[in-house]
Image 1 (cartoon, one colour):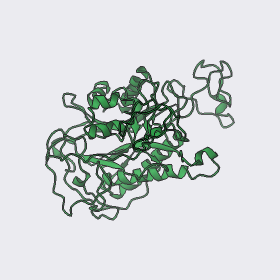
Image 2 (cartoon, rainbow, N blue to C red):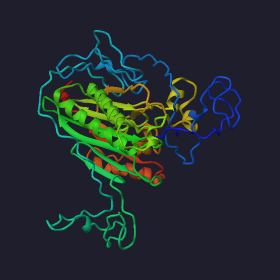
Image 3 (cartoon, one colour):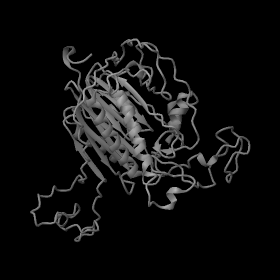
Image 4 (tube, rainbow, N blue to C red):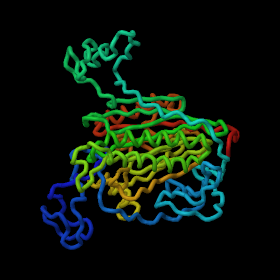
Length: 468
């Protein structure tokens, strides 16, 4: 569960020296006397062992991306210029290439087809002609049934459905309108405490966890078709920033907006990578609008603008391509069906730890052992910095499973090999069951955070069938 510093942090920062210039500090200092570093931006140590993420408020200067060698997978993501795609009018998209290591840039006028190698074969440019189709339906809402709750029978016309609900604890008492059992007094699960949804090609599970009073994660999963009739599946996962106001509303709004944007764009022939970029922008606008709603508490409109905020990560499987997009520290993993082939993490966190590793200042083990490791440097919200959606495109040369998850899961399986180890081998055939297993793994590990995971099977057509 992501967190940002409160508008008025405690004076005591717990630092012996300034993180900016190493100047010695007193416990009551709010700013460094030497360089002026804002010490309130340094999160205090968390009491939970997995330290839910917090957002740092100082702008981050990311180091330049290392040079990419042809056919190399030394970095987890590839340059999106490899896949220019088309817009809704069927035109190429050379003016809006999105890179994974910085803001949108304009690629060269002509982008050569990349070399292939390693675990992935990069797709050659394959622009399509847009086809106008009927608008798709809005993404279905995730069901809100608790895992142990019995499915109620269809009520008779004169029967009130609420009165027929039975307690999930004693299975005998009726649930009152206040959400408590009339027999044993047990509080019933709220709508978002546990959610599950399964389609033919994608499934997702979200759970409140064992330590938090509400679930601030949200997801949207759906399936559609491309103009040529081939199937496409998508998953969006959002993690509310818990130190912001109404984080549960922020994640729900972002997931719904991003899912709807993808469902509208893909059938029109927009390249999936460009569709993902636009979906993240739509999600950001949906979260921003929450801060502008009238009738909210004055605390939400204080000078610090502690506005609703969340992270976002998503994936699209379409036409032999695997597209990912994200802002924040939720992740996408690629786990081949053949477990003798290494699994890969396809996203890079917008976090303090990732910044330190990318800059060469710390090893990954050192960075993630630091109390500031989960401080996020990118999120959606009115108080976020300039929106910089990350997207990347892959063309796997083998079948596998795409794992889209919040840190409530990957805190208990951080490395790609760890995620592959806990993912059931039959996940492609029963994605919902496999998602339930992953959530159970996080709960067994302590369930310190909200947990959300979506699984998208990726199948490679035999003998080169399908699009190249």
